[in-house]
Amino acid sequence: MIAKLFAMNMRPAFLFLFLAASSNAQVKTGWYTEGKDYNPSRRIRITVSNPLDIPVKGSPVVVPRNTLPYQNIPERWIGIVDPALPSDPEPTVAQLKAMSGYVRRKETNGHYVELQVDDKDNDGIWDEIFFMTDLAPKESRDFYIYIDAYERGLYEHQVHGSLSNYGRHTVPLWESKDMGWKLWYPHDVDLHGKRAPMLTAYYEYSTNKSGYYMPWEMGTDIMTVANTFGAGGMCVFENPADMENPSRAYHSPFKNKGPFEDTRYAFSQVYNGPLRSMIKVTTTNWNSGKGFYELEQYYTAIANKSWSIVETKFTKFLPPSANANFGAGIRKIMNEYASVNKKGIAISMGKDVDARIPDEDIGDEVLRVPWQGIGLVIKDKYKPEYKAIKNFGENHVFKMPVTSDLSYEYMIVGAWSFGQVNNNEKDFVKYVEDEALKYNNQPVISVHGYEVKK
View 1 (tube, rainbow, N blue to C red):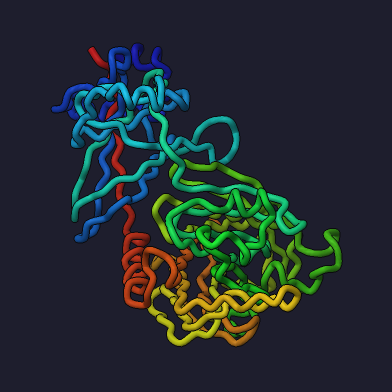
View 2 (view 1 turned 90 degrees about the vertical axis):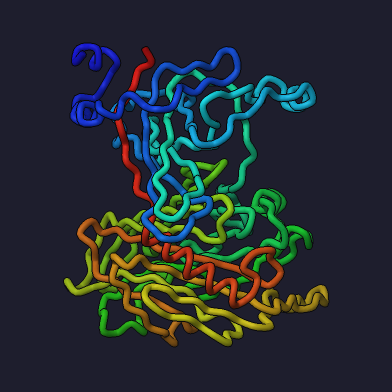
């Protein structure tokens, strides 16, 4: 048996997992098939568990490759099946004509789940399998990773992310159908409101249309960033006792003195849909005048979410003293009338917001938004400490102790009254609080044994 496992390119480091899970190898459900020619002979069972007492809908599930007992799998050979879902029947002639040979055929023993396979470090070897699922309170749900050549199955992109020469400089944009984000400034996020679920960034950057003057149905930019933290930004509190004066990469003493002296930024697209899109920003040569820093940030949009995750990892962290803190913040929104600040959550809401100032050249009137909200969520594990600051145009910020691996992450959230979801104070505050709870208590993934069909 051992020789057979190695012949199948099993990695020895994961042999113990297979042996420990051998009692689970004889599953109760049959093997999945699709059509007359997809009859896979290998699979790995995983269990996704909801730790919460509430249901979660469209919960993101990430399965790292290095947790699997068998890993040398071609990207297109990976399929996810939920054995609890009803199987698709044979498609109709009309369906076949519409989509040709890529329509999935009749299934047995479960239903194929839309997925994404991503290479986050860009080394040519995929790193993660990503999919989404609904889970009941405290539910543990089994899925199978099937391994075999597979050609059928196409699905629409629910997210988008790209880089563009937009407004005469490189700008990253990423979006779900409910909300869009971009980095007009390289560290502080701009926000684009959607009136109806759709992807709009490609139109915006391919036409170089001002985000404030998009076609009505495509929504509009709804954030003034200027020198604030905008809809989300990071910083370093070199003196944690003085939170009014954070160090910010785009506002160093060398700003606008040219790239040899100023902070530098490089941008790349990590992956682009169909279920999540990610942009990477690499920051180098950040000299605060007291400390020196370099870092990588990953900005992610996920299908059907009004939030984005921002991961931050310092590659050089040389503060002036050992008690420096990480930081993140959002601006005090324009015309703010209320805010919520508790346990790692900051929410800022404004009424009658002038989202677009009048254009004197064309006599255009102001775009007034009756209600708008932005939110920031820091995970409990980072021990965030809140403060409202007056500097940099007024902001809601958190400081956090430096982590051992020099990394942290946060969630940014947006909504407005013209959107179809979370378009008022009550719904938005509940949404942010609910998503914060899920963000702090993500599904637990258990990986079981590698099976070969007999």
